[in-house]
Image (tube, rainbow over all chains, first blue to last red; front, side):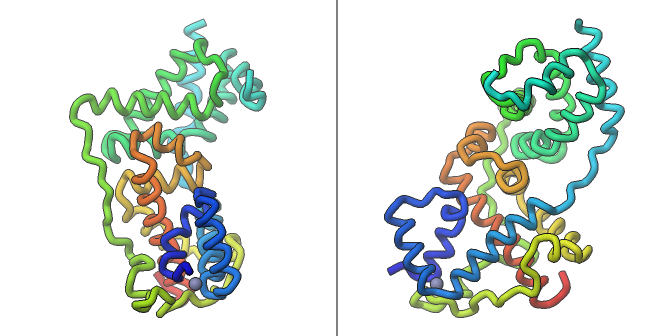
Length: 77
Length: 203
Ligand SMILES: [Zn+2]
């Protein structure tokens, strides 16, 4: 039987869908019985979503760069 | 072309439309920067991205659409970075620089592997609600800033840019097992920061 510590060690592979069938079954069996690890995985997924939505710094000089690249392209034609 | 969503943009790029380039830069520069960061480090990353953009424009006619535009851009960026690096390839830092709020380490578990200090329920359970706190946003930036260049890039490429692990390995020339380790440790550090903030209300 998988321990909580092992489940945590496998958590990223779970999130990335990289567990083998055997591991997947073991993880599923553990999660069915362990509220704490269910919470941990839920919070890991939430952390992922938070990172995804974390606002990114605006790109410096976006307009100038776009203008330069477009100009270069037009010169090429 | 196999990637129909790219073809409209590509046509506009080929025509030299400025707005199309603006769209291209806004959409992909973040991922390109992460790739450059991982390979040449922060000091030279911006220059590599600039050079990569020039290479993109130079080679636009040769883009065949056999890969997605994104993959093509990131490959050019990685190649530009590797050329810059030439022989002095930096050592792959498998880290581990400590995160500001630690990680989920051995001390959280009893000898038998059960939780000793299990995670508490968080007050918020949507990303929007969590991110309304400006202090948490800053706190996360701090944690991301504490990651090594390679680890930070791997995390960004996976979580924000949605790249597959195999793609990350190929671009950065890091083995799959190393990418998995880097990613897992980075996620635990981010988790520890969120947990700390949820429990204490401060960074
Ligand atoms: Zn458990």
